[in-house]
Length: 372
Image 1 (cartoon, rainbow, N blue to C red):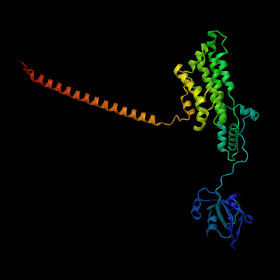
Image 2: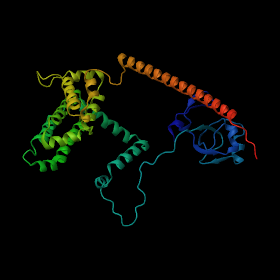
Image 3: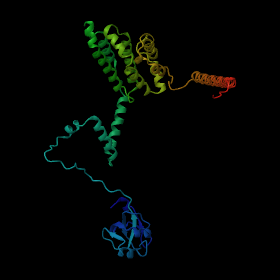
Image 4: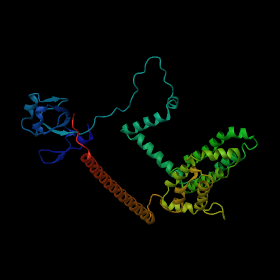
């Protein structure tokens, strides 16, 4: 019996309150459509009935005997109807579809390993939405919270990645000839990109402030190494970062996960005494990349603004005034174009009138034609 039906109470003849299920049988009935107006029910609504002494309608027995109700259990027809409003119970255990002959089922780990990561994610999301017990959703939330708490309490040091990038660019293939260095340039770029990607994957939105600052410092060092690169490999690295935005995007993504106050605090960080703050060293990277090497992939202008405590999406008063001035200039240009158009039309009208006068005069001077 459903809990909602069990909680229903009814008054007996003496006016007291009692639970009818303790001493009375019950049943389920499905009313026909013709009987719905009599009880105020809804189509296809299951009703739990309780045995009582006073029926809700006088002719309930007549309705039942006339076939307007289908009996689904035992019930003398002195009854009180109550909608259950409960969904159908789900099975306590699911089973796979029938397995065709000849297919062997391996263990769970082997079957999971055979699923692609994308398909596994889609299956998990679907199970999370359809799991009525909430087991999948609770496991997902618990993992999210544990990861968040763990990342907030540790600081990751990424210094080894800057050393790896420096070694790959400057010393790993420095003893090879020029042609061999040219052949190895792609390997060097792959090493540098792996360092950048590893830092991006570990410095997430959940990471601690110390982890994010260390990641920014390390990425800045990698940018400085790229700018300072020379010889054959250095030239190929420069060519790559004329268009490759991987390093720039990694720095910007980390800063976008931080508040304005955190960005300003990170910009004031001094990793080595006497060598300036982080925002100053990031400004140097941008200036060298743009002014001296034309490396668009290291134009970290947004990072510099955020580290200074500014919001790159915010329009300042000076920029607003410039926009107003530019709008005024555009309006003046449009007015000038209109004046030019009007002058052109007037000239055309004047020339057309003069042409008409000339044609009329020529017609008057022309001698009439007399056929012979």
